[in-house]
Image (tube, rainbow over all chains, first blue to last red; front, side):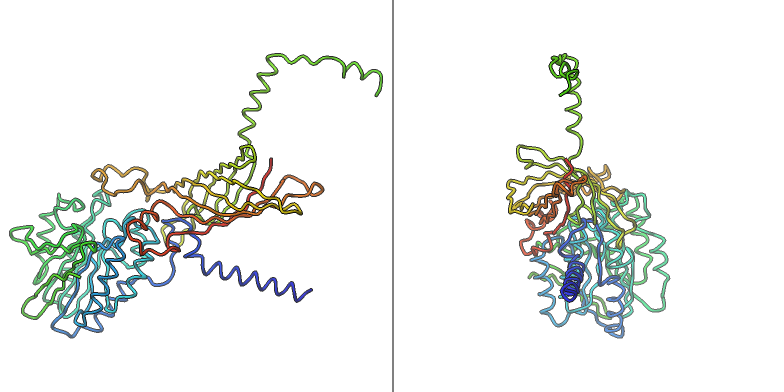
Amino acid sequence: MRLFLQLRLLYFALLAGWLFSACQSVFDVHPYDMNLHGEHDINADQIARIRQLYNSRDTLRVAFISDTHQWYTQAKAEIADINSRSDIDFVIHCGDITDTGTTNEFRMFRNMLRDLDVPHVVLLGNHDFLGTGDQTYEWMFGPRNFSFIVGRIKFVCLDTNAMEYDRVAPVPNFDYMEEQVKADSADFDRTIIIMHAAPYSDEFNNNVSRVFNYYTLQFPGLICCINGHDHNDVARRIYDDGPIYYGIDCALHRNYRIFTFTPDGYEEERIDY
Amino acid sequence: MPEDDKDVYQSEVRVRAYDKRVHRYRKRWEALIPTQLVVQFAGNMGFLSFGVGWSYGKRNQWETNQLIGFIPKYKSNRAKVTMTIKENYIPWSIYVGKGVQIEPLRMGLYLNAVFGSEFWNEQPSRYPNDYYEFLSTKFRLNIFAGQGVTKIVPMNHLRFVKSVTAFYELGTCDLYIRAKYMDHSVKFWDLMGLSLGLKFQLL
């Protein structure tokens, strides 16, 4: 009898353990619950990987993807296409990794990202703000503005989604930009600025878009600016005296861009997959 | 029966219009007394939700629950409170003996509101019209189907609770249905959630 009781207790303990471990996928607390475990601060880890692998290189090949939203079939094909090329060093996602900012979408995106063979960093898009999305981004990927230097090029990734803050927060953050112009200036000669929403898009704080242009021009050797958000593949000059802005298309349209940065300049190509 | 009580039993009770009115008034307000207490785990309305319910219909096949739920902080900035209004339909209740009956199907829908400045009902005025093409981040419409088993408390143990029902529900919400519509490759368990609950029938 005692043995039976003990067995039953063991059974319930095992059952409770199973329920607890299965909790995340089986029991949904709330779409915006942030009931998350596992990998987080992904950008910092990936930047460390990027610097370790490529810092001494003078040529970098970087794939820029954007706006994968919930088009998982296309996003997976995009990742498979990148994996099939042996010459891509790392990937930058220009934001909008979710549609509605739910914890589930972030989890699904993170799972998908594990299939990417090369290092990658992810920017914050306006859709990723919804509900607790912006907090989830910070936990999973890291700060909303970040930068890293590899191969003497500084990649400055900016949160330009001013409308999500009702334009009351310092977005784009000029203090941060000014700081980044000077920070580690001995370690880089050129700069690339990456953002989700380009100046004069609906998300941008267009009251300061010319000021933004001024700040971008302070960066040493500004190569170009790269943005997502518009769901089209485009290269244009937004300001007569400013850099070229490359708009990266969304996953639904099945194309992305690869940039090759050489000591003399850069080349870029559109990839349809 | 004693002689002096006889008159009392024989005398005619006059029910006045006033008594009828008072009776009706009480009966109507009595309908608002909850007939059940509910506690539910998960189900897109919080870690744990507590509330009251009303059962009605010829066989008590309809239930309306009002629940208050609690979302722990997890990795976010703070814990949150939610409120749910839930409608259940339990078409069959089969007695299997020993005071146990099973409900082979329970189904329904519920509307959940999550409180906090992170969430809005209508898109704030900063956005252009229909900028985000779904309703709201505050309200979620959920649908579910599940099963239950009820133990009727025997007469000699009756205190306050008439019967206890344990149930499970498998459900999803509008955003997840939309996700499946957007891309069919989304996995079943990424969208569906299991919820467990207990119902204490009082009246």
